[in-house]
Length: 518
Image (tube, rainbow, N blue to C red; front, side):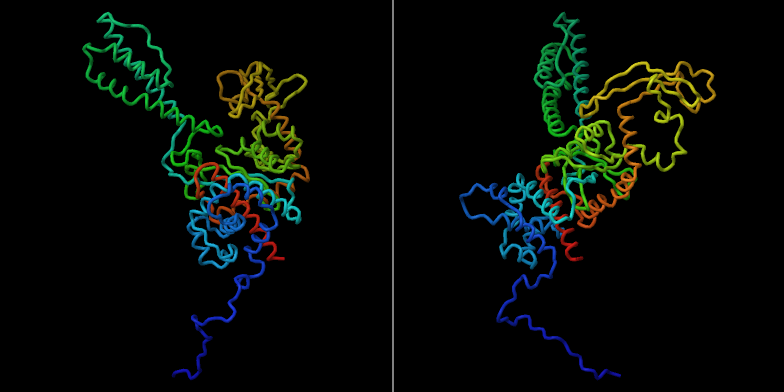
């Protein structure tokens, strides 16, 4: 049976003109993030950005408008300049923010890549200080960690420093082999047999060595395979060495690294954490270091290093450059617990709550510690000796100095037992055929003891519990919620610009969420 109820629809007249067109601002909800972006950028000085313009020519789009559009784009997960160009024509938030201006993707990309390079850090600092003045964060109390972001580069265009060394060694071995053959022929003809000396890294000397071999074998009966190899060497090996020199200069140009990508030569191949691969996958990437407070980003740096350990000092020095002061306290995980980092924090009088590599294991199961481990052996400072669980004494037999990859010098002390023969615990203690010998870095041992005391104090326990709540959500927000796992631009300078934009966008999104909640 059909229903007799009359269906009523609301009026739908899309072509109807309005006597008073609505303002775009009337269509924006209160406490919308676009309002926060507009209000914050209007509250800071953009003088450093204006100074990036030289003047002359056609009028440029206003830098304040362009900055607002880019920041709101990164806040809205729109990173492509072409998609930003489309949003300025279709999205009321972008249209209102730009005052109906419509810069094309070339103008947007040029502004992002060139105009923002120098002033962005100062703009970021102003925004952080503004948030701090509102009581949203404490600039001097830092929680630090790192994550890897994939570069905009082909995953299979890698160059390894070890392969450069192997290539040079291979060329040298083949030249030596050719010269040995030439000497053998020269002895029979009573020709030149003087030693062949050349630098295998110098293309000119290698070319001269090949020419000398060629001259020695000229007009002499020569194996066709040797002649073919010599012709190949003359055409290719000097050029290969010039290519190796260029590649080596790229590897050594920035921070010390072992590889780079041909697509983005500033990117280093790093092992990325992938859910579907147990050991991760090697991809061209950058190491992003972030310090936060109350989940707001206070400091960020981009590194070409594969580990966090060597990045901490540069990261904190960058903080000093930004804020003209050192932080009061730093909390970080075990990836930063090195002698060099502890020494730097002590020198700068920064209260640190930085774990070392075995700290968590010691706290989880202290009763399961291996009593024969080096860090478990009893040390007597007065006699400078160690004692093993079998009450065997290990005596100081000398010290040596060594430097890590960053050039920091460490002092290592060697201890050796007088005799392990007949010890009932020997199999559990060590597998060496000789008496047990151990190496100890006493300065690092002291730093670890001090770190353990701080980390197990009441204040240290609170900060250890707070650290994952402070810094991990920042990375989760950027990489998962915003989907920013791969840079759009190439080169270290442009990657730093993108990082600054995503950091500002993160801070303003958090401020907007807080305002909406309140």
